[in-house]
Image (cartoon, rainbow over all chains, first blue to last red; front, side, top):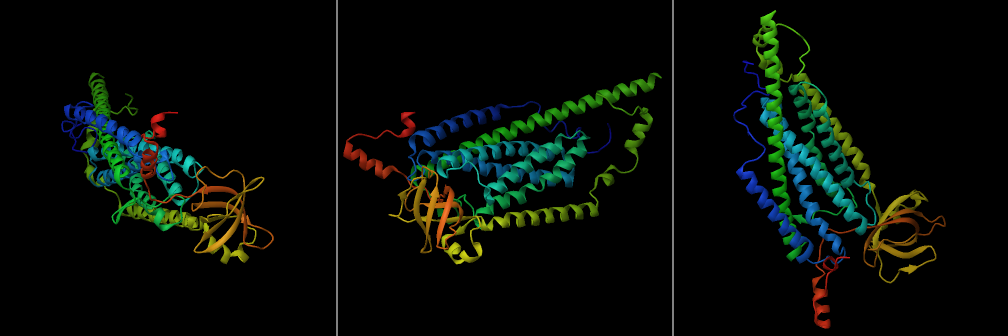
Amino acid sequence: MTTETAGPLEASDSGPSSTGSRTTMILGIVTLLALGVLVLFGLILSPADENQGDAVRIMYVHVPSATLSYVGCFMTTIGSAVYLWRKSQWWDLVAYASAEVAALFTAFTLVTGMLWGRPTWGVFWVWDARLTSEAMLMLLLLGYLAVRGIAADYQVRAKRAAIVGLLLVPNVFIVRQSVQWWRTLHQKPTLTLAGAHIQGLMLFSLFTGFVAITLVFIWMVIHRFRVAWLEEQVNAEGLDVAIAERRAEGVVS
Amino acid sequence: MELTPRTGPDSESGEAGSGSPRRKRRVSLPAMALLVAVVAIGGFVMVKALGSATTFYRNADEAVAQHNSLGVKRFRLQGTVVPGTVAQTGDGVTFEIAYNGVPITVHHVGDPPEMFKENQAVLLEGHFDADGTDTYDSDLMIVKHSEVYKEKQKERLNEAEVNGQIPVTTTRSGS
């Protein structure tokens, strides 16, 4: 493989050589500490809500995980766009790692939302615009991962996935604006540029939620990226070995 | 690893060396145009589909205004529970809801959700009564929450002062 094609072999020395590093280990420890702080404020120190009671505590993970799933979608769309433009494997794997973590966070958002909905609304699910568009986002993320899973050359899979990846940000925008554009059961945002409809310890608990969940997100994306990168290195090495074998065959016969 | 076509090293290196690999990979203009078109159409369809959720519910005043066209058709109704109107019935609960000052009497069959109370916005599924009055027969009630969160603390502090001890929250008590 002496060609300059961008592919699994490109810039293999500029990527990670293991799944973790000293920095990511420290990040992991800080993340665990942040989760501890979140538990402390979210479940113990913060008060119950006037209307929702203790169910309000679900919000401290629901809202941040939804927000971070949007961030993941943005990263996937950006990674996909750069991949289609520059054919950079690094960006493709950033898109891939982000999509997988975003799918996890979206699923978590849906589950926590349903667990909150049952005691507060009285139902787990309604087909209003917010919930429907969020379900679409989940399906699109699963579609992205499925397209990647269809057996084909790396470049083909990456390209197909990248095209799906481009759709994520428009969908995120629809989810985000759904409560403004249409009548929904789901409430409008509590935190806006104009101000917050939440104060004191509840606001602080939501803040700790954002910090902790963001750290979890970063940790997960970094590690998922590293694993994906190393996987591709192994695949590429396998390809090298196989090609070398075939070349040897050719020489012998 | 299996590499199916057993071509010799010459043909392979020849393939890799021939032409410019960059040209092959460039996304062609028609393909890009198609992609943009598909995305635009997909987005349009999605917005239209979600747009039908515009009438996810009707507010009480709108429902009354559209009473004639609605007839006994099923639709979702939204309004705030009017204080002092809630009464238990044999098979459910009856109350008034209002929106923009327009009230509707609701006969709800089934147990209301736990969070159902006066001055609470509720979403109902059902239809206007066949007798032609602004009475709504509901069989599904969903409590609608606002985006405003308020601490229960003040009330608890008052309780604490009265009782002379710190009240235990439900979370800390466990069960």
